[in-house]
Length: 221
Image (cartoon, rainbow, N blue to C red; front, top):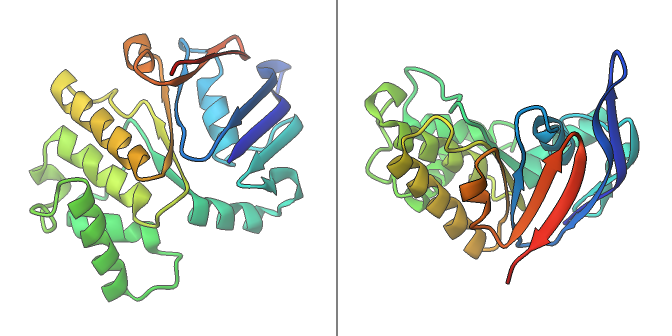
């Protein structure tokens, strides 16, 4: 599903965020990328999500060589194959949950009625079928993150990238969101969670540890 080979990312001023990273993530895996602040996690997210091109090395997403794709091609790949969940929910204020989720299909070519139909199904999938018409300010933090997850998966992406998805939540809500991500994984979605929380990472069968742009790897049965 995802392969990185000797990937580096160097920013202006010679700051090396990734230093020759190689990894392979198979379809349907549940993966944690863990590391302290400044370890290169955000850069890794941007590279895995094709939001940023590496300075050198090879990135393949679902058999596509990222270097060979135009910007439009990368946008199409993201829209069809990758879902994103962030620490901050990025929901539109004053917009009902169903329409926040339907916005995840804006570039699908579907009519609004069809987008809303898919959105309702996605909200049902994350346990919010009874909150379709609620606006973000009427939802708890855990519910808002579930809406964000529904928006990320409404297009049925092959890969879900979650960047510190529990960072803005209390422990109970965070545990609920993590269980939701595990449930999505059991239905076949490749789930990659980026976190600084070693306790969360320790529960994952495939762990990638980042420090100073370098990677070590653990697998657990």
